[in-house]
Image 1: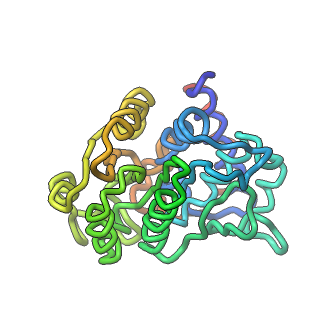
Image 2 (image 1 turned 90 degrees about the vertical axis):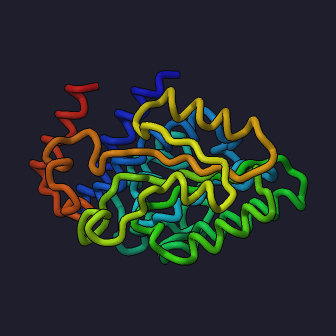
Image 3 (image 1 turned 45 degrees about the vertical axis):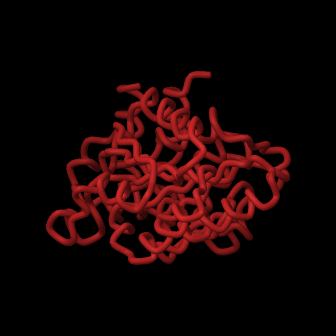
Length: 270
């Protein structure tokens, strides 16, 4: 399986998905592509033909504005037709801008209110342990989202319960809707913060498939703590004019011509 090719396809489909309505949270979608490819195509115990399978691994994208990235990954994994991606946020769509577990096949938890998805992932990890189904629960949180107190309340509780079946990623692109993290409410030193809350912490390049793979393997090799994988990423990764927009790409308009230009760049650099 060529995960680099899968990343290429997910990026292209994110652009088509958001391009179908001309505006969206493109920056934070493009920054988590490699994480999604590793999870959905290599590490997660899932079955697109049986999306409610008992004992399956689950993924909670707590940074809910990255819904289009989740949808693109799910479509490529075979949960639904890629044609549906072009209905994003339209009337009667099964793909709302933020993930909704009641509308989209393969979505394990509704998200939108920052911080709440992380708490849900913790609850799911506890439920999995009670059922003894050996499932892993994965969560993706944003760095701006990490300014929410609910994140740290959950962090304390997960460590207290030694939820080693919980593996979380922080999309550490260091930007949020209104600016750079360091100018608004810096998280540094983020690794030391999570360590002080009792978590197993691994710091990686969030666009390096090998590092992501190894981090997940290391997380699964211990049974004492939940794991936080701090993924250093680039907001808008893969498309220069989107990267260059900085935090302005948190949500930005995309013309048909810009979508075509971005897709051509991704294909050219693949």
